[in-house]
Length: 238
Image (cartoon, rainbow, N blue to C red; front, side, top):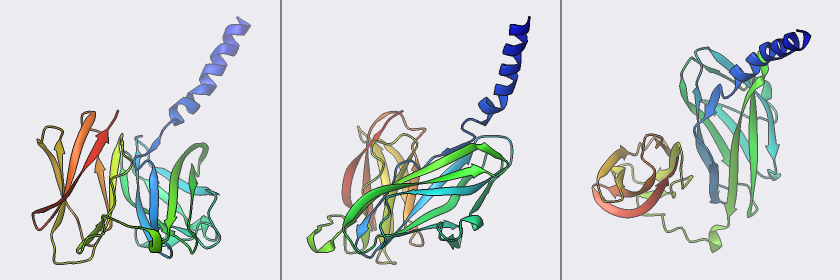
């Protein structure tokens, strides 16, 4: 009887731990910052509150091998913060079921050619066991020895990443000619149209939810004023 009571007590105490698991999911997995010396790149961090409760998180730590000339800034909407100096100001509130899309990371590439990684840990201010981590990698290139085949006259477009992708696939871009109409079309392996996205000249990242795509190989095409510029491969996995 005593052993049964101990087992029941242990199971009861374990319930909060189980219910806290994966309360917020990081949909924008595998963030990658790639750019030239002195450049600044922005990435969108997409989060989803998978519970029926309002959740508020604060930044707990920034860890990684970030160089002395590089800088990370966390932006919530139009407000940007230095996580090393203003950590107390970085707070996120997610409504039940909300998908948050106005969280960004700005990364200053610095003055030395290098690569590395870092991560940001966020914790629920009322439950320290409830947390999530945003992971990122970076690569700084010297433009004097770099050839970027995706730097066109009217637009700079990155490869899709991560590739393969599971939930969110992203493109980075910079529209240099504001008069041009740029879009990304996605087709199946046999050429059937799947999705079409117009690139907003006021933004520089296009996140695409591929969680509803069937696993397999797709092709994405960049169009400028309805002219086919380049077609490349996207792999979706489950």
